[in-house]
Image (cartoon, rainbow, N blue to C red; front, side, top):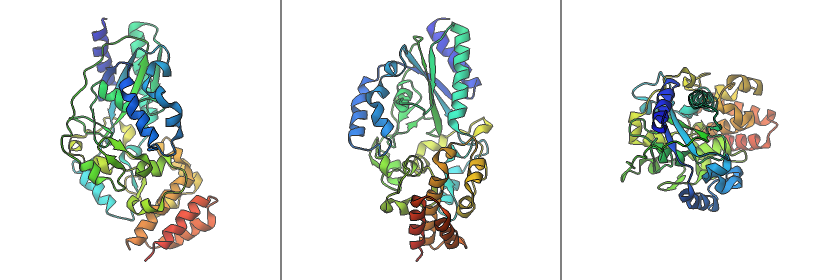
Length: 357
């Protein structure tokens, strides 16, 4: 096969494996380095020290994986198969009910790292069968890789003002993955930006984390605060978190392009453990053993039980302030203060009790 035929084969195999789109990017990302360096210099990465530690290597695939000459990029839609046509309105409704626990849509099913990694490896295996011995490495949000940069350069979409990748026929509700290979392949063409003058995502961010178009201060982002950050959540930001206990979809819910978001054909992303409808008190009642059991195979498990309780405590405090907490909320928070071995959890539970009018 010639190189273009290989790319066509990769795209066909990708569809068979459940990917929505396959592209190819080169390895020269030097023009992305100044933006990365400025973002790090501003401290917008917060406590994600690994981002600063890897530095410019993120923009140099051939240094990260010696021998790499092409990057095969992939995107995979993740809306659950049962998602209703009015899913955006449904998500907004849940956010308006303080007693409900809102987990970001992408995290309600199986851990996407596992799903994409396995299927990207299968794609690599098929490629090796076709072309012979292949040096490669699979990535999916798992190493210092500029995923969004590679995705946009290979035509998987354009960079939205919320910094996520957008596609005209799929919005932004998809995962990204990469396959670094030592095989020279022709790059697929990038697409154009279609955000125009829209700033809906910027206006929708509860904590003002999108400080300018295409510029995100992770330290203010609810996804960062509930997942990556393991210490005290700044008190000034807690009220804006509402009932979001793992991640945040607000900028995506506001984006007009997500009316085209596609449902995944895979059962992997269907909600598990009632995470699309559970109450805060139900989830707070999980012991550590129950937490580990209910989140087995889920991306949620990696934050640990203490961080899970911390997040729920903040949400319960917000429900108390709104005067819409379930009966038994104060007693549950007091039990958390009395039983938790974590001072961080205790302090957040005390703060939550103080929110009672």
